Image 1 (cartoon, rainbow over the protein chains, first blue to last red):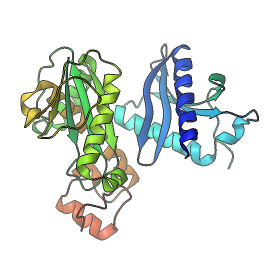
Image 2: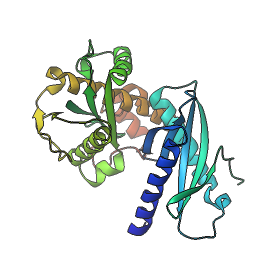
Image 3: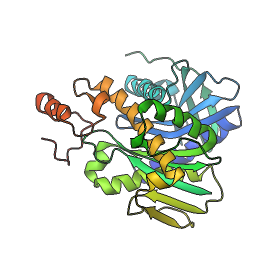
Image 4: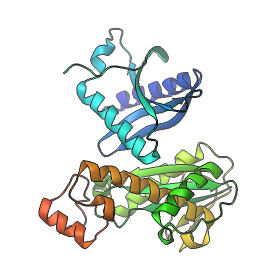
Length: 121
Length: 182
């Protein structure tokens, strides 16, 4: 990854975190990482203590964006893996998980897709 | 506020090295060196520490341990744990680290190494419990993902059972290849 792409991603994550915080989410973890993958942000709705949301942040600097293409089966699998590990470490068996996609463009969140579906293979 | 830092899994042949940084806002009774407690006591104290303190956790996985060395990987994990904690607490007056060497930390507060600090400093003991519990739970996950090695029993540490399993199954991707494994 080039330095530019890294910085773009980092900046986008900062924007997404601020957006999530001001929309009723509590940040549980950022860049939660295992040997087999990393997830950008893990949050929880302030009024729903039994729900944990795994958020993938995508930052773009171009205009043509189709979010359908940004979650590949492999990436979805990674999100599920991260949810399993998070659940194991925090011993929260009674918690529901949801996977969200936050799209950032030009320093602002322009789309927040809740509960993304597993992609077709 | 005094930050205590300790690590778990430095001597293990497999799995990550995990570090925890802890500030205790109120004293937690029963906190002692993680190695002197049973897993059940550790789990109970883990919950109490999280409620009565602020916690940061950092970890470095086996490939990082192989690329730098175990000492530097431990320091990296400690740094990550400290940075994550430092975002949430203010001001930090002092940092105490278990062991005889200290990592470089991004703070103006004095950083001290305390030999056997997990037995003398409450915040280091608390950090040792957090690091141990987090690592053990992750090893539980690795046991499910790589069955046959017995990670759930020995947590990656060099036991006879573990060495025999390596002999029988070869290495898993979570083994530290720079260690003397055979």
